Length: 303
Image (cartoon, rainbow, N blue to C red; front, side, top):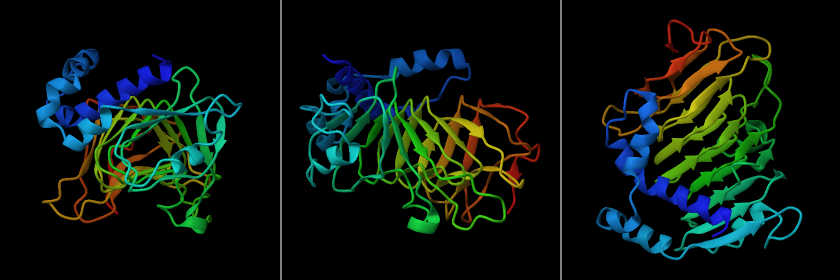
């Protein structure tokens, strides 16, 4: 089995266990987390009765498409590989992306579920584009947009390369790197880089493991249900406050919110807030999180 297929199996396992993870108590001791995580992973056959039959069918016969910039693959661009997948896709399609910088604006449509974008953890590919709200609108400025269900991304650098907005001066400078809008998606070992509005965790249930997100203002935002990452707070050009989250829960009965567990908050900013409300009933929890002195002692911004 090739490396790409081995990593794909790992990614699929993460996706399959996500419902089990969020329903079980995470150990307070960080040293026990990996053992706990590995103990939850079960073969598909052992969990068959608890899984979506369409998912079981999709995983039974996965297809691998190789993207290589220097040749040796079916395609030389990620976008073209995704375009080759038919609407109404019913099988796991693993797009194995070779090393290099892919300057592309990538979108996975809602009608293309069960897609995996997979890089090599030892030589992670860079997906980069410089879209901004001024040109595309905020949520559509993303370098990578995933609207389909059962999406998996692993071992990728996802970058919005637009310049850092200057506080109080740059109009339409919001620039999303990743937007996830489908349900039951898993993001593993990905670095997500940007400044304002880096990660749009839009809607649906999403599990992030061993990921890193950097930004300045509201750089994790949306109304999804999101778990786990490491955070780096950048300094704003021209000064001004920095805020990590802007969660968009609208009512107390809405089952959404962000949970950060066994992560860390570091950076070069100062007096950064953990979050502020985007809608009327935001819900954000930081548990067992290492917070450096970049965090404002007040923690939350009430505006």
